[in-house]
Image (cartoon, one colour):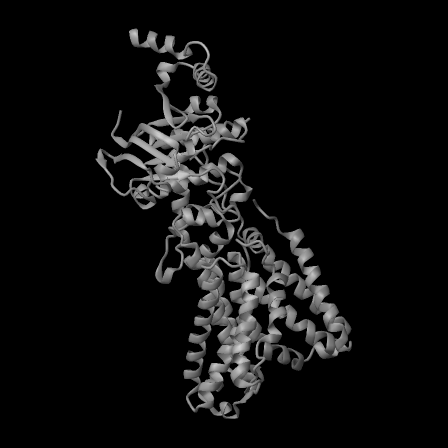
Length: 264
Length: 333
């Protein structure tokens, strides 16, 4: 595996005496797609907010490329190359694709006037880079006219323009059709091929299983399972495990599978 | 079925004209309303509308409306509203009148008025944005407050500035060249600069981004509060210019200066095709909207109807325009 991009050690976050995240250890390496799973209330969104710097952990250490970062905040998260694409509040849908990609980081010439040509060609380049191209829309199309999957493409193109090394996708395929989900997967694969990393959060275990190489399952603020795709073998095994932690009865269904693998 | 993995360069270049029409639907719609209205006026009073004086009388006062409607488009786009600009206009014009009355050069008066106008805009903006008040109610309050601050010391007395006519500032900004009011040129320059500011400048695109989705804009590092305050400062600038120009046109400052512009200016913004929900708008449309509103009044009286019809037709045009834009525009969510 590549360079260790980010590592969380013993991260805790408590609200009063309730732990939303209670001692999480996890890492994301360069060029990998990690799937983050967990039921509602498992601590996924708190963890994402911690990674984005929006929530300050009450305990624990954060390492970026091997060195510990003190005073973690949104700015430092961004400097570390982490970009979070939140589910539905990511885009300004009445604006064009170009305007969304360069939102807050416009390419300007003299007196703050926009360099429209440069923005357009840069947008075309970014969209090609993630395979986000079509005959029916151009960089000047209004985002509101795009499908759900295509909107994720705009958000990903923007993250790449913002020089993100780790793109966190929060439920990017929830409420998307099969075709649209496949589009998002295509963007994710192209992004990974360029050496960037993705943390993919989702409800639909089949979706996450299809796209990620390694899975982290959260349960009540802790990592209940961390496993590679090769080891867990199938989405059904993953689902069986998640049902097991939700309603523990009988032995852990993964025990056997993982032991087999370990013995081999 | 085409594979979704198929990769093609984006589209054939969109046809230039089609793209222009698509991108300017609202303002072109407004222009169509204006043309239809003028055709009707022409049909009813061909003799009056084929002669210059009626246009001259509209052009006299139109510039004042343009200075107000343009920044208001920015405010509505960012998702706010301002009802305090009439008092800001009256207040800055008062400063202008005082400076000129005291014997200083009108240029100095203009600079003072602009500074005061922008400072008042800043104040209104800070009250609305940082205190988190509803702009509808807070600016209504500010309008009363500022008007009161004018009325108390002046005791409602106007200031006459008869010496203004001999000054360079007057010749440059308010005289007429061959029967054509020169202030129109300045107002048109203001509109053109604002069109570029709105469409092609960092400020304009950030105003639109904040009005469209403040969460998204904030996440992308845009200081949404600062942008919103900045639109109010811009409104203050426009109000000050409107105040100065209206004082120069009339050679007189009235304590009620600006009051009459509140509703026509608001109407012009929405007749112009800027929707109420923020994120999008059109400066050019707003300017055409101001022309429409100015012509309704003059046109109806000139067309031979009594002044009692003015309000009725004002309302009719506003409602018809809004219906037209409703049909013409889609709100993307």
